[in-house]
Length: 114
Image (cartoon, rainbow, N blue to C red; front, side, top):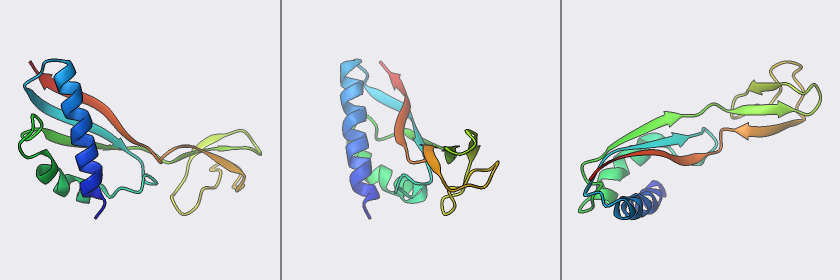
């Protein structure tokens, strides 16, 4: 399960940000995760307490905000939502698309207690 190593990297980043801001506790960690990120949100949530144990993030609430999968059509110019197994334009149905969002794993927000 690579979600544990993802959580460990996340906790390292969060701890560093907390130290830079003289925070003694992290209350909430908000992540944006797209369906093509390669991370399973449920497994990330289950691995988080183990990775955060003994850190300023140990009692933090992990909030995951799913992000839409969006593509830009190079044929008609439309930006539409797509599904992970069909990156087709939602307007003209063409397959000449460019991914706009949906592959991200982003630390979006932290709530710190100083």
